[in-house]
Image (cartoon, rainbow, N blue to C red; front, side, top):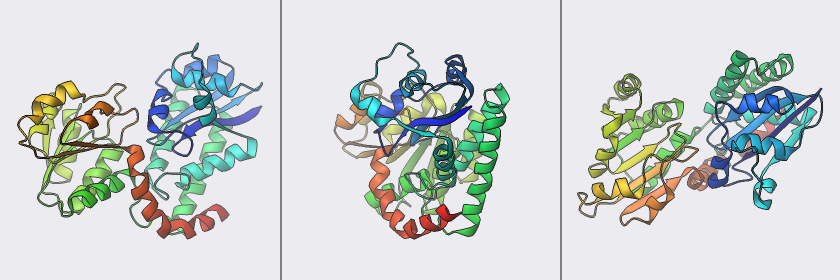
Length: 319
């Protein structure tokens, strides 16, 4: 049985390319029909990877087509070049690095551990992951916990959400008087909201498709919940919008933002979109007074905190 990993990440592809290969709920079924005896899809903010076991070697391009949701898709040269492949022990080592946060854009971030665990549990529940992937991922979880316990790699801003807030603070300085809306209420959004609260944000609003979850998160950080169908209206008043949902399509486009801008009286609106696929149409950045940052824009901010933890990577890899 061949054990392998195929994927692309922030190391090899920009967000525009990554979102074209984000996969969906059917991907694991498609992978198994393509010849994978076991298959697991791991999507995060900065990567999408397939871990699989098969009797015969399955071409990387075929795996990529499964991720694109277009079986007949032809990969361009640039798209094909963005994919990497690890087999056998290199696959094992790569997963250890991913689960430990060593391979993340925000080195040492801990939310990737939860994302890996969620992907594993999903694959186990559907029967897509069998004994080979079970042993692999259980071992990865143990290694990741050892890395967090025995190194200081998690010191500093160690989540995508906290780095997004770092960026907002670089732009505005003191955030205490800024009005902020967080759209989404998953783990990344929760970490973002907690980081905003810890930096002194008083006017914090949360919106999510699940009104119950939005209220729960808002209460956790002393904020207010906004009905999901009304969140765009908030763009008339807020200073900062941070989005992190699991939508397959953009939630905000120039045509539905334009009416809100007329009431802003030249006040700038800063948008930080940390979702993949992106929540905000890139065309929004062309609008006057709007400044849009996507997940790739956080790279330079993350690299500043990386210097503080770089020496811990060697210690983590030794584990």
